Image 1 (tube, rainbow, N blue to C red):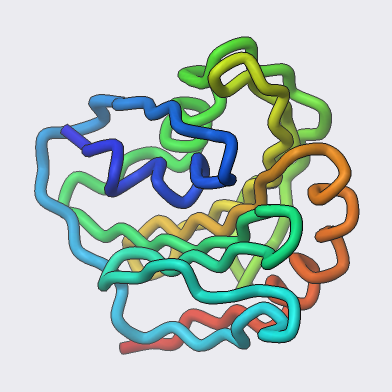
Image 2: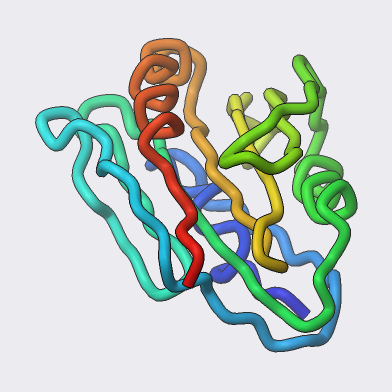
Length: 167
C-alpha cells in the first residue's frame, strides 16, 4: 500500500491544503530511481521544501504553488495509466481539463491538467508521468488558480531540464 506521504505529499502541500489521500496500488516496496538530472526551479522564486530519496518539492515563496518530482521503481511495475488515474480519480470532485499523450525523455507518457477540491478549495494540478527503465516518474505542479497560471513557464523550464540517465 502506498502511503500518503510517499505518493501525495508533493501534490497536496500548498499552505491552505491539508487533505491527504491514500491509494492502494500494490503492496510492494518501492525504491527511487537514482540517476536523474534536473535544474531546480528558479531559487529567486522557489525554495526547496522537502526531499528524500523518492521525491523533491519546491514551493513558490509568495503564492504557495508547488513543483515536485517523484520516481518510483518496484518489481510490480504498475501500469502508467492506472497509476495516474488513481491520483486524479481519488481527489474529491476532480475535473479533467486537458489530457494528452506526450513523449518525454524519449518515452511515451501522459500529461493531465485537472482541478480538484482539497478541503473545499479549488486546486489546479498539472501532472506529467512516464515510465523509463521499469520506473514511473511523476512531475507535477499544483496550486490555487492565480499562482498556478503564473507558474506555467517555470514548470515548462523545469520539464525541459529533467533527464533520466541510464544507471
